[in-house]
Image (cartoon, rainbow, N blue to C red; front, side, top):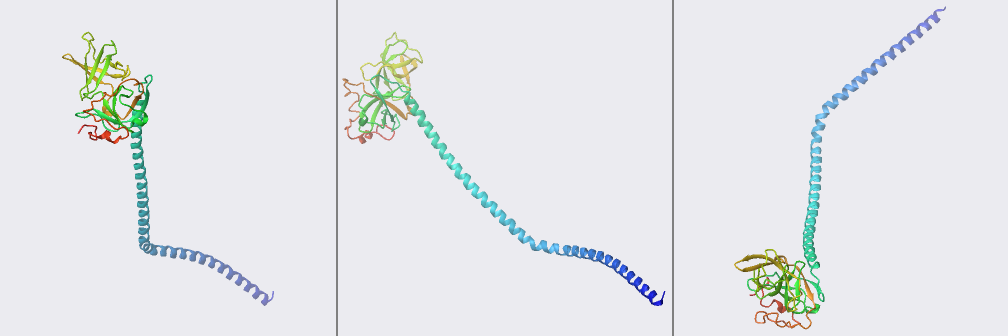
Length: 304
């Protein structure tokens, strides 16, 4: 082998060794660079983290405040909506209570007694009944509906009174509790006749009963139909007290809760009804003028 060949082989070995050494060096250098880079990144993060936290704190506070404002606004809007719904429910509840009361009153009228040859016409009580001097009530119906003096006024419970004055659109009813009201009656169990007289109070005085009548507490008292103005068989009340020969009857109708009534129209043909009211106590009305029904009475139906 020549010298030149040996030299060439030696050079190749040197080159190969250098390449192998360079490869290992690059491998270790890459790992060292990655570790250094990772350490640099970690150091930068640790250095910048407090700065970023300080800088971002106002931003987070603003975001929290904005979210709080949104929450408050949403809660306020929800509160307004709920308040509106609550007010609406209250109004509907009040309306339902009013309708329930009116329906209860109307049911009491629809169950009123029906009498042959008499047509019931429903009306509203315009003024509160009762007073110190006169127990009367104004009703929202008059001559234009066929109402005349002497028409009985009833509810489902029994007799309220008698129409004594009539205008075009309103009428005045003398209640059986008025001191001027005298109702021919009978005891339901024995048919003994008598007469109830109003006392301007809560009880009626039952008079002119025969001595042998012997009424009982709780006994039903009915209209007798005597005279033809009132039909027979209408409930007037029940015997409430018997003391010292005085018999007191509690009316079948609770006049304190009188809202709707029924007027029994007809059945008075051939009957003189001109003396049903005391003209010196109640001023007769012109047929075409219903406003004078209020004359001499206050808003409660009491005589001034």
